[in-house]
Length: 150
Image (cartoon, rainbow, N blue to C red; front, top):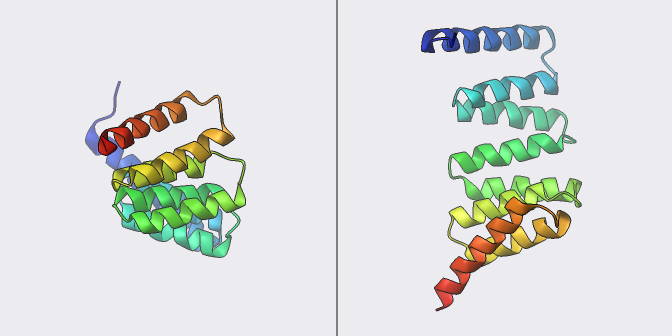
């Protein structure tokens, strides 16, 4: 049986309360802050999620996954410049990964920077040549670039 909307809210509130209680005991725990941020993000509470993620990164900057999450949160509220900075930082820490470049491509595409998005997707594809979804995105952006030139 699927829980109703009120039950989901109470579950989210219960989880949030659990994280807050744990943070009362361990206030300098970047992992707890990151998990609370994820809880907020799932609920659509982006600003609170960002606050937790950024605090967690401040305490422990060596969390590449959180760099992507911060970028994604910034992109979700159309703060693209901030998002791009976090994706770039991720790529500095994980130069062989396609993830940061692919997200940069999405971010640049949403802003209408099709050639820059194509470059980002090309970098992502060079790191993951077998990725069909990256190839599809690159081909789609290249079609838009060609149409814009015509």
